[in-house]
Image (cartoon, rainbow, N blue to C red):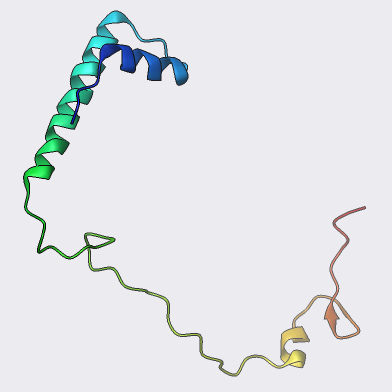
Length: 96
C-alpha cells in the first residue's frame, strides 16, 4: 500500500474546504499513513479458509411473520370517535 503524501492531504483538505495549518497537515499525513500501515497488516493474514460474511455478529431478522389476526370491527373502531360521518372519522380541516 503506498503512502499518502502531504500534497494529497492538502488537496483533500482543499476539496473539503478545510484550512489546515502546517502542523495539522504534517500531523494528518503521519496519522493517515499510520492507519494505512495498520490496514496493510491485514493483507498478511491468510483468509483463504474464512467464509465471506456481511456482519461480524450473528444478526438475524427480528421481525415476526406477518400473520392476519382478527381486529376491531368498523363499528368498534368508530365507537369512541369524537365525530363521525358516513362511517368515517370526521376531523377538523387542517388546510384552509
